[in-house]
Length: 173
Image (tube, rainbow, N blue to C red; front, side):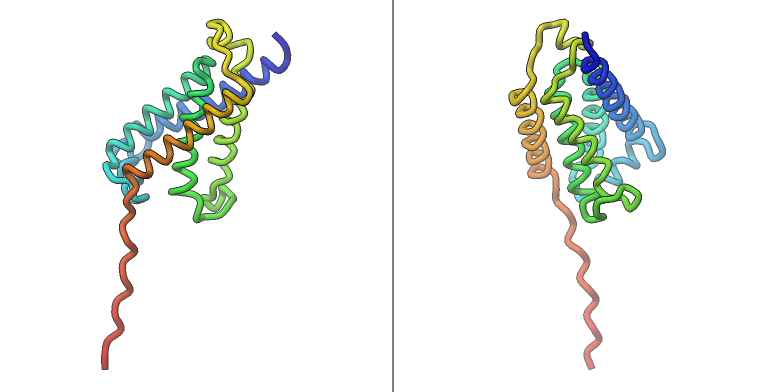
C-alpha cells in the first residue's frame, strides 16, 4: 500500500457517498419519487416514474460499489452515464457554472469517475482483494464506452421532449 492507494480510497469514498446521497435524495428527499418523476418528465423523459427508480437504483448501487472498490470500472460507467444524462438534459443549456445550474458539477463527477476507471480502485478495495485488475486503457474504456452507450440507449428509448408551444397567431385585421 502506498499514498496513491490512500488517495484513490478517498476519491472513491467521496464520489461513492455523493452518489449514494444523490440517489437517496431522489428517493426520499423533498419531492420523493413523485417529485423526481415529475422533474424527469419535465426534462422530456417518458415513463418518468420508471426513470426515477432507475436513477435511484443506479446512483445508490454505483455509490456502494465505488465505496467498496468493487467492479470499479462498471461503477464508474454508471456514474458517467448518470452525469451525461443530467448534463445533457438538465444542465447543458445553462452554461458551465453550477451556480447558474450549469454542467460544471456533473462534468467534474463524470471525469472523476472516468479517472477511477483508468486508475482503478487501488490496494484498499474489494477488486484488489479479489484479484480483479481492470485498469488503464481497459478500465477507462469500459467506464467511458459503457457509460456513453448506456446514455445513448436511455435517451433513444425514453427521451421524447414535448415540442415547444407555438406562439399564438397574431390577430388578423
